[in-house]
Length: 528
Image 1 (tube, rainbow, N blue to C red):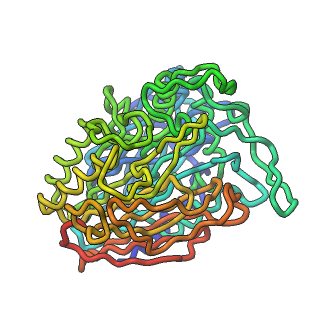
Image 2 (spheres, rainbow, N blue to C red):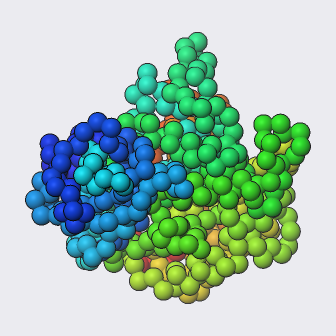
């Protein structure tokens, strides 16, 4: 499959934050043509699109002052024939952010959009338009599908370093011109303050862009919002957002490291005045919903949930999990019964139902945590485990019981083409799970691919738990902990599905786009 970048998409990359020469205000607002001038609403944080389907998509923006959001779409970047979409009034209640849902779009087409911000008291006063583009999901399979995934941004104190060109990995990803980007969690590090400088092992100095909200751990709603704004200070990320739509999930660092519902921070942890994780999580979730265009969170869905399935034509369904909100407490993971597990009963039932209903050739399960990699939770000295595996290679215990139930379901319902993608552990690897190597054997073989970080500390490879028989076929990781992005070890993954054969190719890539590992999977097999 080939997706050569169109001239239009390259233009968006070059000028995502630049203004058109002259743009008229929507006539439906009763305004005469006007040029953008200083002192009018502006969008220095750029635009982004998300949760794109065959006929719809969400467009996001943040204004620098109260404004009315207006979106115009066209088939070409000349915007000669436009459709206008009246968006929300952006105000302090949403931190001046807003999302507009576009509907009735043509399937499988390049959509060009521009966001206008109008003075709510004078619709003649508009800021410079900010442009973006995305491709809607094709109705057929001929074109194929290409997408990227990774996670873990601005962690361990490694933020936007202008000496290194900021988050350069986003430019490498943009050059591949994917249909969408799957952000696998840890899109911010709300628990990780960023200082102006940090010492590097070679004696040089790492320099960070800094903001007030990133000077301490986030506790207030304003501080969580400031964490999301911080990443949007990076030019590379803003250009990428304007070119590539996203599917976003969350994990722990959007709130606090290794958090779980009901947790209370120990009084000895003086960095936090607010000790109740449920309170912190509610604030973080609100900020998360304000800063990403997600169809199942407010304002699109008032009840709100992160888990959802995004259908990308006949070739692909992406099942976006939330392994954080519904989990039980982190523990040694040795209990013989665990009805809550890492997904919660309701989400597990949803996942089974949607997997059985899917007719897509490939069912990508987007997990924010790995299955067979041991992730300890040593927060405040606790000898617990954070993910699914707990290091005991025997029969399933603890959260493994829920995963065993899911894998058994996939086998007995003859569900084909399941592939697991994740991030979280700050290295890249490929694991093949095989019942002949496992203590639990009632499942079909499958693959799990790990990528990340995008811009965070890199860490040694995690230990494997033998319960589901993983074999690590490839890994690249440092031997030391918290290796800075200046030393490399920043990764993203690529999935390329051929429209003709249906083959799925996974490539694990380094920061500059270099391919480290490739695996081609064949369609039509139960599990994979």
